[in-house]
Image 1 (tube, rainbow, N blue to C red):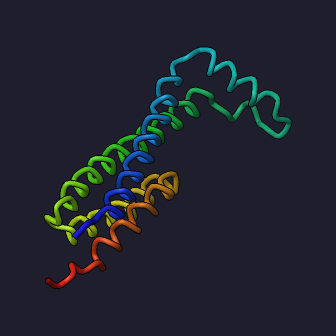
Image 2: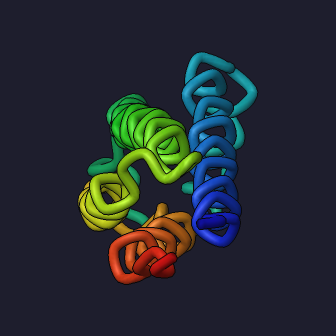
Image 3: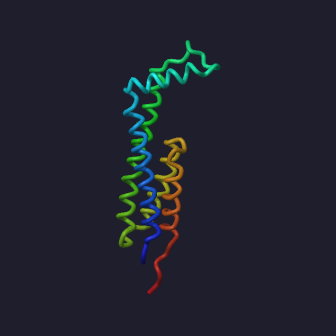
Length: 139
């Protein structure tokens, strides 16, 4: 039985999780850039409602970088699980296991990334459901 739909949907999810991890790695790399810090301070000073005594730019930058690292790690793990699922789907090795892996990964990754990975998760969920529900044709 051909499982092209599952492979394509999972592949799209893998690429999207890779893009998420790649883009947020840029955020982590920018945290030590003095120009970024100055830009952020300038933006905060332009806000008339900002209480400048309460805002610590260093803590803000560290918080952003820490959150980005969590999302990067989650994206990489989801990407690797997607590749393993494609391996299980190809040749009809273990399509039900692959479907369960995809659905669980999509839900957990979407929750951990606070919705950043929701689009990639949707591709995983659809591929997982197809993998579980689709029955091989009797001979």
